[in-house]
Each structure stands twice: as structure tokens, then as C-alpha cells.
Image (cartoon, rainbow, N blue to C red; front, side):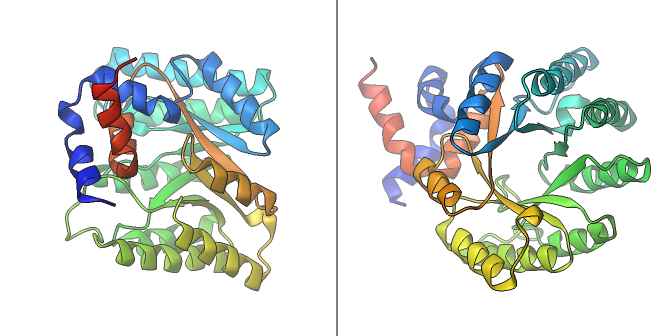
Amino acid sequence: MSLFNSLIAKSLPIVPKSIVKAVASRYIAGATLADAVRVSKELALKGAGSTIDVLGEFVTSRERSIHEYETTSSVISAINDNHLQSYLSVKLTSLGLDIDPEFAFANVRSLVEKANGLGIFVRMDMENSPYTSITLDFYKRLRAEGLDNIGVVLQAYMRRTEEDIRSLLPYKPSVRLCKGIYIESQEIAFKEPNEIRSNYKKMLRVLLDNGANVRIATHDDNLIDDATNYIDNQNVSKNQYEFQMLLGVREEKRNEIIRSGHGMRIYVPFGSDWYGYSVRRLKENPQVAGYVLKAMFFRG
């Protein structure tokens, strides 16, 4: 990563929103659920499943969280009605976690129950560190209620992740393992890229060796190669894992993994609340910063 691209990425908050939207549109299906359905169908033709996410987080009013709940519920209906190879991803803060945890739990339980009745899976996304423990608590509560169509996300850069994995192992959980994208302190998170990679590899082995169902969410060649080698050497069943990538990121690599015979699922976000998600994606991939600069000076 060049210093120039890094500086552009850090300057994104002062870049006009219209520019960010133009550059980041490749990462988002569109503004509507119909866009997410269309993209999911296109991905299925290319051999990939999808997980659909309604953009929006850190909701602070009950009215907005009810709106988010209703929109998310409509995703479940759309997956069923269109026979999509998809499941639902949901952020708890969009369902009112910052307003009232029990209100948020009732919302997510209702969604999971609806999805369960239709044979559809739901994954609770992991947000930044203030929400880690309560997200895992929600997962355990839902499993205790007999709902097994639910999964979580764990972030390899968090120092607590191995402990969290071991607390989940009795549930034979479905876990999406990612590096982590939120800004966290050195005290609770690994910061150096090689430290994060090393912990990712270790956590992947803990999950696979203990029978967890693992979603290997990464665009990092080092981690992809390590995972495929370990899977091959240990004869891991294809039912126990799949790779996951973000919409619009490393599409050639995505296709290569599919051609190799591994399962692949693409994260498909949609909605009007696109800005925060887009800025995080661009900061995570500063190599596209040059496109931001070109868009600023060569509009149209």
C-alpha cells in the first residue's frame, strides 16, 4: 500500500459524499431489496451463494429500529419467495440494541423464528467491542430456546476471540471468521497485520478441529492459501466450511476459489444508509483510493 493511497483513504471523511457513493457503488447491491434479489440471482449463476444485509446500524430511536426490523423481515420473505441461495445477516444495533437490549432481543428472536419456519439461516454480524459480549449472549440465549438456524461472527484481531470460540464450542456453532475492521485499542486487539494473520490461522484451526461450521471470510491470499492447504491436508468435509467475500472485492479470486470446488458466499448489502459502510470498505481497501482522486477531478 502506497503512502499516497493511505493518505487518501484517511481523508475520506472530507471527500464529498457523492464521490464516495460513486466509487463505493460496486460494494453495494443498490438502494432497494429488489436490487439485492437481482444481485443474489446473478451470483447464483456464477456458483456463489449470498448473505443479504440491510445497511444501517447504531439506531437510536424505537421508530427507526421498528422500520429496520420490518425491512429485515421483508428480506426473509424475499429469500423464500425467490428461492434464493441466500441467508440473512443482521446488525443488532439496527434492531435497537442501544435503546433497550431486551427490545433488541425480542426483535432478533422474532426474525430468527420467522426464518426458522421457512428453513432460512440468520447470522448476527459482529460490531465493535462494546457489543461483543452481548452479541454472544444473544446467540447463546437463542440456542437455549431451541433455535439452531443462527450463527455469529468472530474477529481474529480481537485478543479475546479464542476464549469466545471455546465458550461457543458446546453449541457446535456456525461462525464467520473475519479479520475485523473496527478501530480498537492495542489493549484488546492485535494491530500488526502479521499478528492478525497468525491469530486468524490459529482460530481457524481451533474451530475446524472442534467440529464448528466455519465461514472463512477473507480476501487475503496468505489466509486463503493457508485455509485451503489445511482443509486439504485434514480432509475437512465441504459441509463444514465455505469461503466468504464482500460484494465487489477481488472478483477474479472469488471465481478462482469457486472453480477449485470450494463453497463461496458473497455479502450483499443494500439500502439507503450506505455511507458508513462505504467509508469502512474504502479504508479497508486503500488501493482503490486512486479511483476516489480520479472521481474528484474527472466527474462524469
